[in-house]
Structures are given as structure tokens and as C-alpha cells.
Length: 168
Image 1: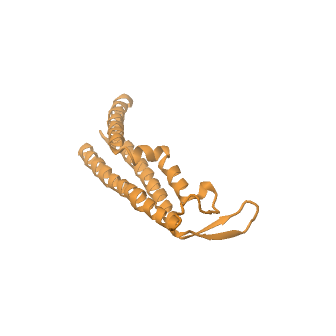
Image 2: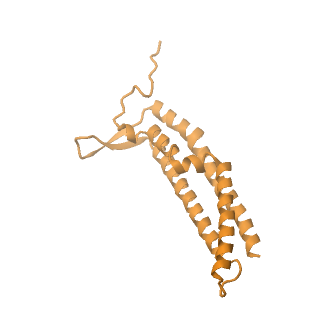
Image 3: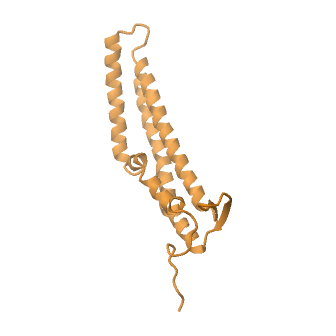
């Protein structure tokens, strides 16, 4: 009868903070990831609320300050443009974080340093760890990356339509 080896019982010279499952959990529990990647409808409500709030506030600001040189919606368009730029920057940062995590998990050989030694050493992942890492990539990381890309496309489409309606 074959003896089953559990992946956590095998020897892994990596510190707990550098292991693939720990990196995945840290990134998934990040505050921005929780609300942008895993609650997209709530984020859409917040973004549309921000959009409406900025639209109302900039219209009131135009009337209060009585800009004569600006067109009717020029201040609104500028504020919305920077809001969209900030949101897209956040999405690109998240996409980069998930891509770098996937790249780091896919590596079959990991470099590490032991506590007392200054030189780096190589550790080849066993088959069980590679299988576990591929499961994490296929069932957790790739769907999250697809969700982020879908949200970038859909929210930019919504904002461009609303942006076009305002500028007309």
C-alpha cells in the first residue's frame, strides 16, 4: 500500500510568507480586491453614485463660481475624466498584481535565502506542490483575472456612454 504524502507535511524551505498559497490569500484578502474583484455589482453602484455626485457637485460649482470662460459641462467632464483615469489605474494595478502572482506560482524552481546565509539557493517544487499550484491558478487566479478584464471593458463602456451623453 502506497503512503500518501500531504503537501503541507513535506519539507519546504521557503518561509511561510513566501509560499504560493500564502501569497494568494494575502492578495485575495486585500481591501481593494475584496470590493473590486469579488463584489462587482456593489462596485458598479458605488461608481454610478460617484458619477452622479460629481455631476451634481460640479454643476453646482459651475453655478456658484459663475465661470464665464468655461463651457457648461467642461468642469464636469474634466472631473469625470480624472475619476475614470483613477479607476482604470486601480484596475491596471490589480491586473498587474494578479499576473505577477500567477507568474510567481507557475515557476517550478524557486529561489530563496535561508535566515543565516546570504547566498540564494534553489528549491525545485515537488509534483504535489506543482499540482496544487496549477489548481490554484486554474480555479482561482485565472477567473479573477478574467473578472478584472471584464470589469475594465464593461465599466469603460458604461462610462464612455455616460461621458458621451454629458458632452453632447
